[in-house]
Picture 1 (tube, rainbow, N blue to C red):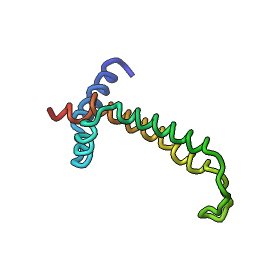
Picture 2: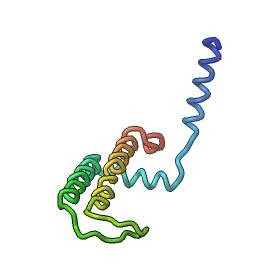
Picture 3: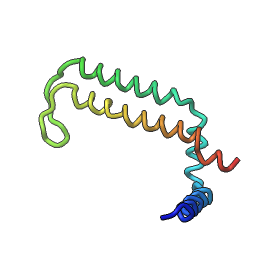
Picture 4: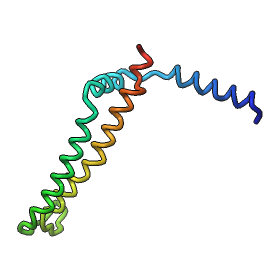
Length: 109
């Protein structure tokens, strides 16, 4: 592959990206999330970590049967459930930041 053909490939891929438009739903989601400060997701992830730790440290409670018939002891399932929110909230914060920096609203203005 020579320089001219690779240069043509780059130009055609750039043109394809410029022609791609976001759908109505994606634009409405981006417009709503762009209004939120990025710190909200970081603070929410921190609260989820602290909440998960609090549930874990609250200690065991009486054993009970779970939905699937297994015996569950302690608050570990609840601590794990809340703890799994952390990466999700951080990814939402990353998406929010990307929308603000390079979202489709930059193209439409």
